[in-house]
Figure 1 (cartoon, one colour):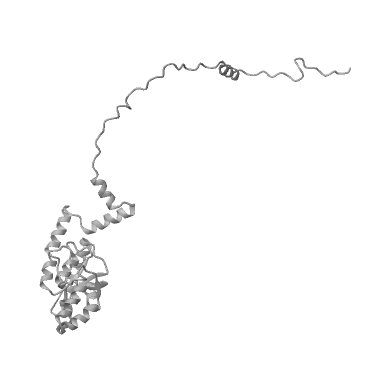
Figure 2: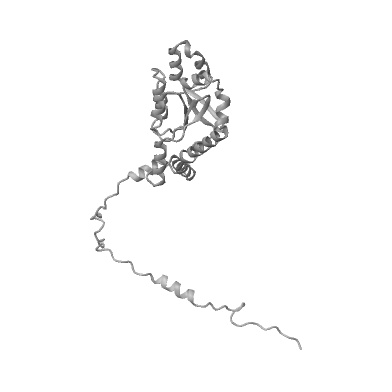
Length: 254
């Protein structure tokens, strides 16, 4: 039974890896209800979650989830101690805490950009999470941790991407990395797409006018000296022998 459960979990994880760009270490957002269920069923979260997901994990929570356990009293004191051991992620409700269910939904937004797994036993949270595509859901049933199958919204999103109606997060990330390697900024490309076409303006009428010739300024004639210099260059110069016109021959004594 355990091997079959891990095979199903492996298939589900590969679905989120391929279609929503989930990578290790997996970030798991945990609330107080999950810690309380783990305490009752004697489940070691830090030990069992990495084994079940077959990879490295980062266990985290929010300040609102911790505040909620403090207000509920001594009955959830053990769950509070467990939850305090995890990393606390910043949420927008630091000054005015809200219920943990509302806080978790706000952390994921509409597209789960930080690729969170969510571990909770709260029914209100699970129903809200199933409406967001790309959110793996963990809960505890019969002393075991279970990774829920992909929701219908996730399946619909993947189908829309395959049909060409949407761009998956994995494809968006690939586009960003390619643009970063080529030195292209996303903002510049968006601005170029939004630029309006320039209207064709008429030429300047002054530039179309013909140039007027200046009257009263005669063209300078060619100099005679230049013509003579050109003629002299074309002629071959005659070299005369040294000592005058007649060369003296040496006298030979008989």
